[in-house]
Amino acid sequence: MAGSRIARGCVAAECGVPCLVVRAVADATDMMLPRFISADGRYSLPGALLNCIAHPFDVPELLRLGRAYRRAHTALAAVAREIIVDGLDGDWG
Image: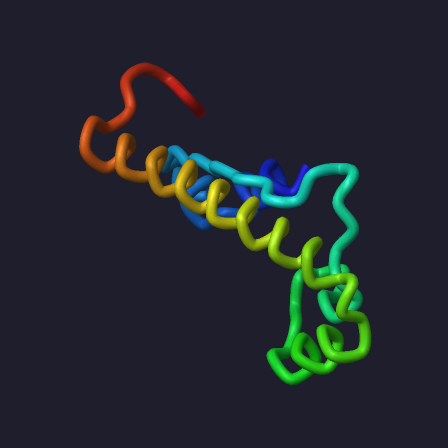
């Protein structure tokens, strides 16, 4: 998984400092990413606008992805807040 590669590649790991990777996934397995989003998640605003004009039936799926992204972002922010405010107890490395 990408998270474990990140953790192993962390400079912190080389220094013996614990590293925590938290991921939030926005797209469901049945969700098709819009044509203008590349496999690595990059997109351009002009490409998005042109895609919406050329493929108006993709707009509802794009809105669904936007809502899912906001839910994932909210969940990730809550976890980050919990870690920052309450800290972590125990051995998690």
